[in-house]
Structures are given as C-alpha cells and as structure tokens.
Image 1 (cartoon, helix red, strand yellow):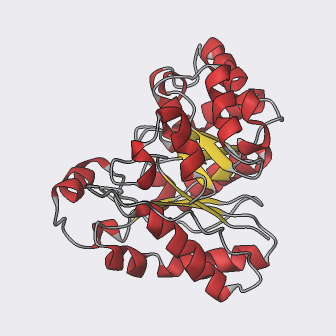
Image 2 (cartoon, rainbow, N blue to C red):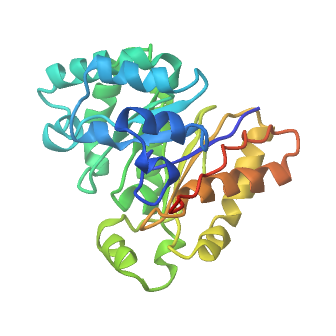
Length: 279
C-alpha cells in the first residue's frame, strides 16, 4: 500500500533546495516528496545522460511522470512524430521504474472526434512503459458517450485518465496576481474522480491561501483512501497558482490520507531547514 505525493516542479525560489546547485535540487526535493511531474520534457526532450542524473538523485521507488513533448501531442497531433517519440522513449529509459507513467497531455482542441488518432498512437507505444492521458476538451466531461469511448481506448492500452481538478480554484474569483494569471490559463472542466487502472494519478489545483487549498481537497482524501483500500497505488500532485506552499501542502495531503488509512506508511521527515545568519 503506497500513496506518492508531489508537485508540478522540483525546485522553486521559495523552497529550501533553490540555493543548491541545479544538479542537486531533485535529490533535495526527494527528501520532501516522493513524486514529481515531469513538465520540462514537454518543452525539450532531455538527453539520456540527463535522465540518468535524475535517477541517480532519487531512490528506485521515486515516481516521475514525464510529459510527452509538445511536438508529439500539440504540434504534430500524433502524425509524423515517430522520430520525436523514439527520442523521448530512449531518453526516459535510464529512469527505469521511476518513470511511473509517461504522460500524454492533450490540448483543449483535442476533441472526441480525435480519439481514434490517440488509440492508434497508444497501440504503437512499447509495453515497457505505462501511460497516462490528460484531456481538456469539455465534451469528455459533459458527454457520457464521449467519456465512455475515451475510457475504452485507455482501458485497452492499460492507460490511466489523469484528472486535473480545478473546481476549488474556480469556485471564487482570483485574489492575487498568480491566481489571476492561472485564471486565464487553467482548464475549467467538470470534476472527474474515477480510476481506470491500479495507478490513478490526480492533479489538484488549490488556491494561494493554504487553508482554502486544504478545504478544496477534502473529497480527494476520501477518494484516495478508498483507492488504497482497493489495492491501487495512487499518485497525487498538489498545485497552487504560485506554488510557494505546494511542497508542504503535498506532505499535508499525504498526512490527511494517512489519518484515514493508518496502515499507510508516513513520509520520511525531511532534514531541518538551516536558517541563514549574519555571523
């Protein structure tokens, strides 16, 4: 039984690891959380040596969910992307089991009519990796038929449907610059909380006020606890618009689930943060 938690990034100027050399920041992050989103791979496929460096900084049970590059999902839309896909898969190979799932994030323009192209893409991918898909078109959340068709395609591939829960974020108007910026960029879709596989992945967006973030995730605490009791191994990523508190909030989410499932092992305690002094 294991719940992994993490953030959208492994370093932030407000976090303890930011002052470290870049080659040490992931390792320091891994002392706080045991999973991380691999958003950087969306913009550029790293070298295998870079991925090997990520592996060297983390334990074998650390979970990384790297995103397929945008040339595959957004620009090429699965057409003529064989070279980019091969480069990405080769680059992820050094991660081994740390590559918990390779993440296919699709643009809001990817509609139910495009699902057959996703099905063909998933069928061509190697079985040596697991896969997770995030869609943002409203029809997948509002049209039961479209949702069933997507679920069938994902189920046939053993892939998971990744919900990005923004319902708490959009419940009330923004109150900070970071929230106002996120208000124009984040997807606004209905809540989805159904697991298709033994490895559900949740992305949750709260608010910059930690109390409101905690209040908004309460339904997920019960859902994740239920998944654990069913024998699933969930991963939850906690976002906030400015992400200043997300490192601590991810740990708080884990603790909240553990209060519901006492047999869940606690996260290791991170090292104390050294405060800088003048002398």
